[in-house]
Amino acid sequence: MPIATPEVYAEMLDRAKANGFAYPAINVTSSQTLNAALRGFAEAESDGIIQVSTGGAEYLSGPTVKDMVTGALALAGYARAVADKYPVQIALHTDHCPKDKLAGFVNPLLDISRQRVAEGKDPIFQSHMWDGSACPLDENLEIARDLLAKAREANVVLEVEIGVVGGEEDGVVGEMNEKLYSTPEDALATAEALGVGDQGRFLLAATFGNVHGVYKPGHVKLRPSVLKEIQDAVGAQYGTEKPFHLVFHGGSGSSLDEIREAISYGVVKMNIDTDTQYAFTRPVADHMLRKYDGVLKVDGDVGNKKDYDPRAWGKSAEAGMAARIAQACDDLLSAGNKL
Ligand SMILES: O=C(CO)COP(=O)(O)O
Ligand SMILES: O=C[C@H](O)COP(=O)(O)O
Ligand SMILES: [Zn+2]
Ligand SMILES: [Zn+2]
Image (tube, rainbow, N blue to C red; front, side, top):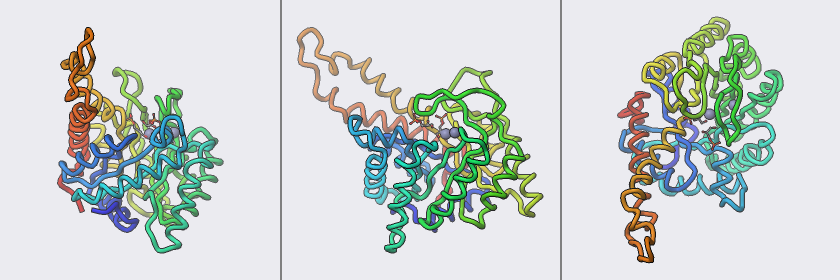
């Protein structure tokens, strides 16, 4: 299938909310992890979302080049070419973009998409995330308002974050405090600033103890009921049930109960990175340890080209990651549910 058009993406998101399921949103950083994600979605017969972080985009441009726009465009171009071969709908998204990176990432990408849409083409990415969680809420929402207007012109969905996601993001470890839980007041302010879909389509990452990375139990507690409080408060004010399309960050390591409860409150997208990173690398570790005398030139020997060919371990890595994604599709009830 071609990459989801804005119309198809809108239908995907609305179907998920109406039918009580969510899409895994998988972070990718290379053609291999992208191919693994496509394979995982196809094997689960699930539509899905593939996303790239600012660090991922920088890496994709070449680790010495470090240009986020170049890397993001390269990833999208590659995805557009290969996604055609899979029987599922895939939307492309860019992950957390803080204020100091807007000018070098989301703004130029939105400009390119606006230009394309003016020429009658589809946008490059179907959605972008603005992460204003480090700003005061007023400023976060003011920037979100501007971006939502630009995104609307580009036929792009905007994801915004209220509250804070803990753990690691681009190597920076965030604080663990009460800000990890969004409040109904934050959500009401969001609806006031951005509407409830009438000023342009947006996704809301309202936090409920979400953390990037996987930690030992007891670190922070996920409280999905925070999402219900938010939907109920804003729903009562605007006379709609579950007004927000919600995003669950830090999906790795979450229990099935937490996931299913969150979905029941209107989560339509769950981000997964750490678990799929591990699922990719685990088979590589196995390969290197089992075949160390093939991948290394031990004691002056010549090694084994068949073992150190990057495709040999790359294929196992991709299979491992694809299986974890198929698992996520089962957990999120998107498996077997494609458009
Ligand atoms: O939220 C995420 C990306 O935005 C992913 O979080 P995890 O790495 O904890 O799965
Ligand atoms: O933001 C969280 C995702 O796990 C992306 O991670 P990254 O910023 O290290 O690419
Ligand atoms: Zn954040
Ligand atoms: Zn996140």
